[in-house]
Amino acid sequence: MRSHLCISLLTLAFLTAGCTSHVTETKQYSGFLGDYSQLAMAESASGKPTMRWISPDYHAAKYPNVLYTPIVYYPAAHPTTRISQQTLDQIRQYADQKLKDGIAVHKNLVTQKGPNTMVVRAAITAVAGENEGVQFYEVIPVGAVIAGTMAATGHRTQNSALYLEVEASDAQTGKPLIKVVRKAFGRTLPNSETPITLNDIRPGIDEMVRDAVSFSAP
Image (tube, rainbow, N blue to C red; front, top):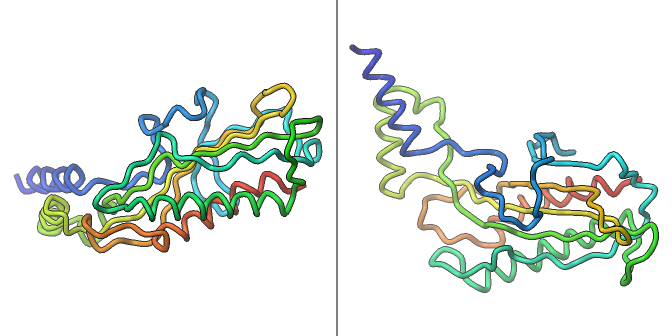
């Protein structure tokens, strides 16, 4: 009887508090990349899990030039009580500049399509606050109930998260060369009502961009 009670309480904790997924789930794909069927779980340069596909035809040295397309929100982002329009603009501008500058370290940025050139386009598909996963100290009956109650009342700490989708394609043929769907975490938020700012998301963007441009290195 006691074991059944513990299992039920732990199940309640997982359902109400939720476990944070470290990669973008299939249902969260935005449609920006069109075809996601070839994506597979991989490890980023920083050791973080990511969904990725690299064409066997891709060789970094073959593409010294990049036609860079500014980052967009896809679908279009709208301000909420937690994320203002100013913050949305700041996040997009910061991520865009970081990605562009990161690519420029390894590649020549060009303004027209041509031979030996990749077109790089990217989209921020979500900025969110997500409940943290169940911690070790919560995996006891009383702890599970407390964790579930905190999540239900909005007082549980959250992870700030940003979702990014990136595609690099051959500028002349349009053939995809690299596809990446990445989720990165920023700072921890005190609760589900705390406004999300650029400073919260910035660490996630920095890490994500470093991993993304690692493919550009010769």
